[in-house]
Image 1 (cartoon, rainbow, N blue to C red):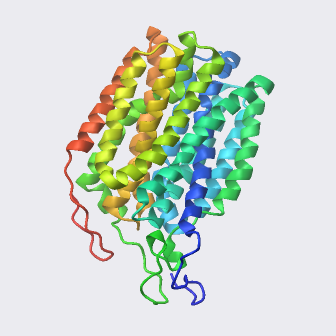
Image 2 (cartoon, rainbow, N blue to C red):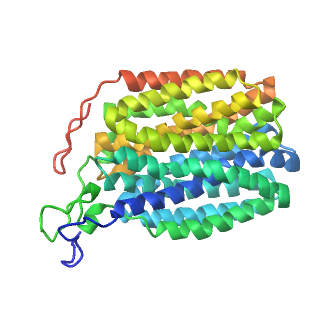
Image 3 (cartoon, one colour):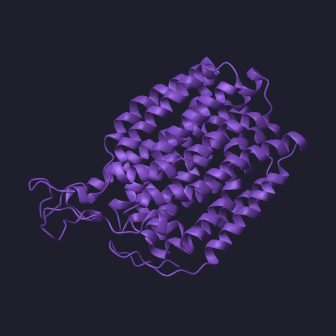
Length: 426
């Protein structure tokens, strides 16, 4: 890309707010709106079951379809963002998300809910999530864990705020008007935030972390890093993919089934919905605190610890039946879940570089998409057959323990990255 002489940054950027933090703020808002809308689905489960006479497994399939798309579609939106820029994908995603919520408000049967919410929300988040998270990775190096954590802490804040707001709106106006209100909020705030998304600091004549480029060349260099093809053929990608896959089968079960689980154990509906918000509180804390800590102790080791923590908290869930114990589970589980989501893109960037980071993250997230598609629905079927969540929770624990072992035991060395010669990845 050719830069005009007047556009590159001046020799000193001291005293100015680094533009990368605006990209982080945009990603925060976009992930908050996207995942807040997606994870509020648990608040709608009871109303949809009642109005459409659906089983818990059938209603769970709505979330699973959306989750499969918003993680799986990254394999398409990531490379598109690498080629055309992240801003266009973020804007498209927010508009699709608003449209999906609007159509869900008018649905007359479960099939229409599948199409409106599953496709609309799924494609909307899928278009925006990977591109904006990938953009954040390019803007930072030394503080990448912190920046990534702050960006995706929007998921935690969205999970904290949107489900109780949706539940309140359902109580006041019904679930249709609740979806309509969410659609309006996403359309206004999401479009505004998309304007702050920028693909790379190199486009502004800066290096990651905000220092001016050492060269005064009029040509902006491309970020270093390997191609998507070279990345997905590496052993490093294989262990990342395997760990994500086995963890994802269980990690999203609480987002659909924690609220009905609590109500089955006598917790009042208003308190049951609060549990989902507590996952958001823990998730936000985990993203803020664990990202900077991982920058110090090593991001791969910290990622393994996140998987282990998820397993331990899911095991505690199986033994919980009162509100206070479920609340403690939600907080701690949320912290480890938030740490996992924050660290994963940073670990990918550490290994593969930034040139095709969105495409590589998108390819990796197909593993999470498969787990999200299968896990919550399988848990719903298990409940419909047995009246208990014991078996799916045990399966979730085993999957997360296996993910921790894969991540902790696999030995890697830093990947040497050049623009001309793809490295040998191990």
